[in-house]
Every structure is written in structure tokens, then in C-alpha cells.
Length: 83
Image (tube, rainbow, N blue to C red; front, top):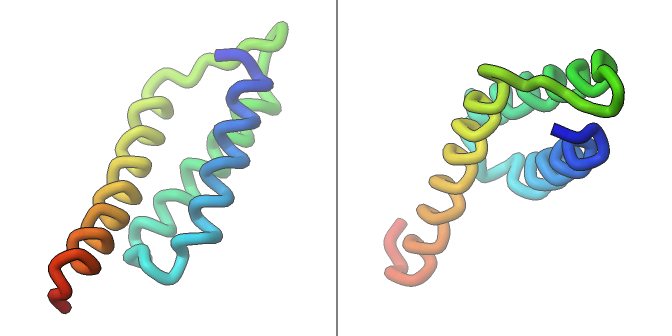
């Protein structure tokens, strides 16, 4: 993965974390923080402008899935008016 693209992804994850912090379970926030930190470390370790994410890519996708699940639950709750 190109460093510039990864940096954009990290910035997006940070914005999502900041915007949804109160709505997310603390374990999801902790996992998101951990993934962000590891992605930032991967940027620092980049070689020739490329980053090898390996298993970290799957972990990042999993945490994005948890955030999306929370967002969908909020939408459903708003539409159906259920607590």
C-alpha cells in the first residue's frame, strides 16, 4: 500500500473515532486506537513509499466493521424509534 493512501486512511479513522467516540463501546474505541497506532508505526517503517500491512489490514477492516455496525444500529434505532 502506498504511504500517502495509508496516511489518508489513518486520518479518516481518526476523524471517525473523534466523531463517534461517545456512541462506540469502549472496547471498540480501544481497538480503533490500537489499530491507528499500529498503522502510524507502519508508515514510519515504510520502504520506498510502500507499506506492507499483512495481518494488520484484516484487523483494520474488522474494527471498521465494528464501527459500521454501531452506525447501522443508530440508524435503525432512529428509524424505528426504539430505545
